[in-house]
Length: 319
Image 1 (tube, rainbow, N blue to C red):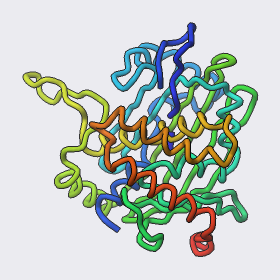
Image 2 (image 1 turned 90 degrees about the vertical axis):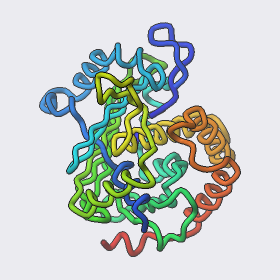
Image 3 (image 1 turned 180 degrees about the vertical axis):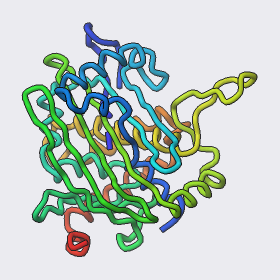
C-alpha cells in the first residue's frame, strides 16, 4: 500500500523529485511487507518512534539508488515476506492526512495500480474496502481475486497519523494481511511517510511463488542492488523482494499522482491521475513497464467507470 512525490525545492531537505500464478503472486507481493524498526518502539510515543526512524535513515534517503528521499527495504522470508517504504514527501502533513480519512478516498489512488481492477467502499458495521486484484489486463470481476480490507484510523493528531487496512485471509492460503501507513509532519511543507505491509503465506502460496519466479517472473527485478558473489558485480534484486519493491514503487507513484491532482476540479482528477501515473512509471521502465500507454489508459477508464456503477460488495461483505 504506500509512496509520494519527493520535493524539488526544499532547502532544509534534499533536492529531489520523488486465477493465475502471476496474479496470485501479485496479491502476496502487493499486500506484503512488515516493519523491522517500529516494533522495538511499540510501547513508546509512535510519533517519536517514526521521527527517530527518519533521523536514522537520513543517509539512506539522501543516497537512495531509486531516487533521493525514497528508501525501500524488502525481505524474502519464505513464510512471511515483508518490506517497508520510507519517503520524505513534498506535501504538508494536513494535506496527506486528509487523503486517508475514509475508505472511499483510498480507492482513488489504489485503482491506478495495474493489478487493482476494482476498489469501492464496502463499509458495514466496520469501515472497509472491497478490492479486486488480478492480472495487468482487464478482467471480469468474477475472474479476479477478491479481498475485503477492514479500514481503521488507529491514531490521529496534529502531527502524527496511522491508518491500517487488515484482512484475515486471502487466496491460496495467504492471510493476516496488514497495510499500515504512518505519517509525521517535518515542517509546514514536508512530511515523512512510512508504509508497512505484512502477510503470512501457507504451502500453496509458497509453491505458487516459487513456480512463478522460476518461470515467467525469473527476469523481473526490483530496485535494490545486491551482491551474491564477491567476484560478481552488484545486480538488481529479483524474486519476491523484487516483486515487493516494484509494487511499493507503483503505489508510491499512485499516491503521488493522486495528491498532485487535489487542486483540480474533481471531474478532471482521475484523468490527470492516470496520465501522471503512467508517465512516472516509465521513468523506471526496467522494473515497471508492462503495458503500452493507450492500453493502460483505456483499461483504467473502464475499470474506474465500472467501480462507480457496479455494486460488487454484497457477497464479499458477508464473508
